[in-house]
Length: 150
Image (tube, rainbow, N blue to C red):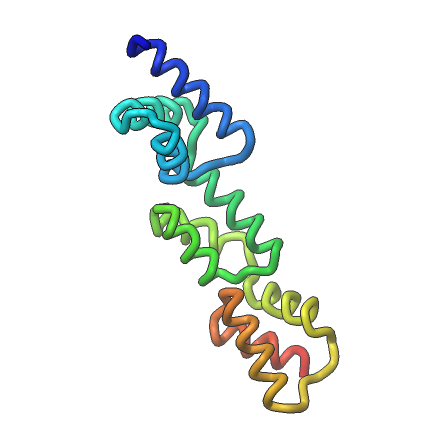
């Protein structure tokens, strides 16, 4: 297969993946490399897609944060997941702390999982705090969620 035809096929494959959902550049690169495309060609096509604003780590971050927050995850967990996808820390912070009240989110996640009954024993309190910590909320956010319930 000649080079221009390979590039056209690669571009078509990349666009197909992007039509399904937003991707981080790192994710899309890995998916295309696994399919056997050449690294230099992948970089070339992804540069073009970024220039055309078809591929955007910022847009991916926004969608990802919204999706994970709506599923009950906190800022630390989401931030870690985005770092694994090689999203720039500045981009993460721009969206992560812009539109979300993480204190209220922690309260809602706690209520959804454990109900509105006050926590009276330490074992249950520790269990709820561990759950919120696992979900990615800070100690301060967990504290507020626990106090709001008591």
